[in-house]
Image (cartoon, one colour):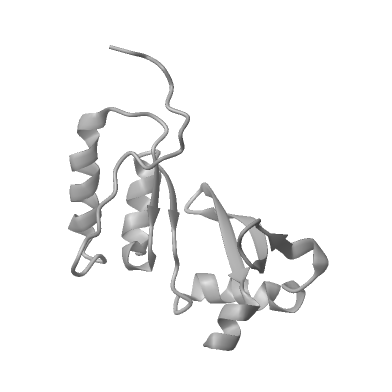
Length: 131
């Protein structure tokens, strides 16, 4: 068995799930399924459908790194957007990636039930015009 560390940054596992993801058992079942890997340092990336306070609490309790979209309908995310809205398009928040268009991003560090939590807000003016 090789102990070499994987450095490709390719996903270890990917699955599209259909249905109500706010159903707390969905995330719990995915975590159970992935437990056979016994992999350390997993980072789960999920869309807004996975966001619920219970799911976030489960991920923190399992010491799992994660990124999850948070709907603007939550007070927690909306307050952050309102807080940074006036400063969003400042030069220090400007980002450009080769091969893609430009966007603005702001990050802050806050607390979620005693855990460190990073919140990110992105603004893409091209996308905003289209919407």
